[in-house]
Length: 162
Length: 162
DNA sequence: TATTGTTATACTCTATAACTATA
DNA sequence: TATAGTTATAGAGTATAACAATA
Image 1 (cartoon, each protein chain N blue to C red):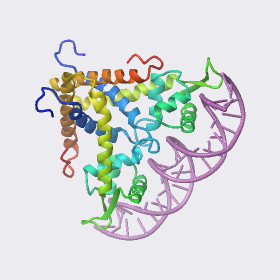
Image 2: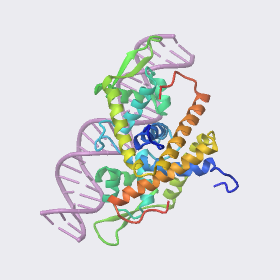
Image 3: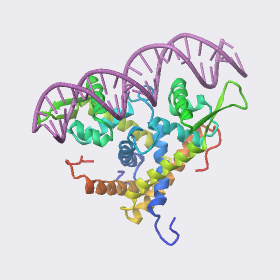
Image 4: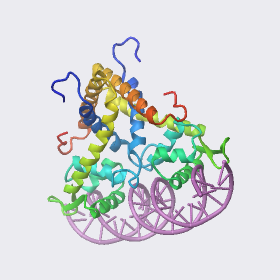
């Protein structure tokens, strides 16, 4: 902690955030078969991104996942087979495709998000109101900062409303 | 937001926390081959848990991962083969084993943690000092609340110092 | 008999490489 | 020729089931 400052430095907060992130990674990082969710962690990452960037093509999705086209193509195969995702022809280029979540896919992401928010809320309910208020303010600041940095290096298509 | 209250409710904060958690899941959820870390997400979950609960047996580790013994046994095979983990005979029961991180395993977890804290710090550096202070207070409250709930239902072995 | 851990088998996820179709 | 996407193949991760060893 910067002793001469009224405020904690980035590294101080990062250490604390890292511990919480690891908690969530262990808690939510399990595979599909045992978790309440009917999709794997990999499939869920696809759903999150396609939800945010509706109509994204496979190449761009691959970049955001930091994966490879063949892996993502197979992931899309399975998501399409179970009716969560849809491939459609691109309007601009006949060699590209557009990826969209189906209504079932949108509903599943909403369900998973709701279940996770509920598990978070159980912890948050134990906290004091002041701590909750501080956490909310801090998280909102983090989101804004993250968006600012992302916007700097990737103007890209429009971001989602959230 | 509870309009009649000075403080946000658990659900309000959960919604914001969920968005940030999804950001980190997409950012850090990639596989081993392309990420900077030489271990997969699954292997990293093992390392986190064994770091925290040194000497844990395979059965308990399996429960914490919400996985199955056969899967965890294979994971340990590979972690042991690359020298990050060690199986030793249990002192109390000859059908159990104790899992320990090797010095290399401990060093790897520390390296990954440091790299992730650095990537978090890049975002945190963009935030105002007041927002950082709020986030730190909120995260500390969250950790305390999480530990309190976990302690209620799982006394178990001693928790780590962090 | 119940518990701990491993092995056998099958399916998913991942990557590299080779391929088709389009620009 | 370069780019978008798919298919072939191999290794990692996962689960169910069957197994050996111990309590």
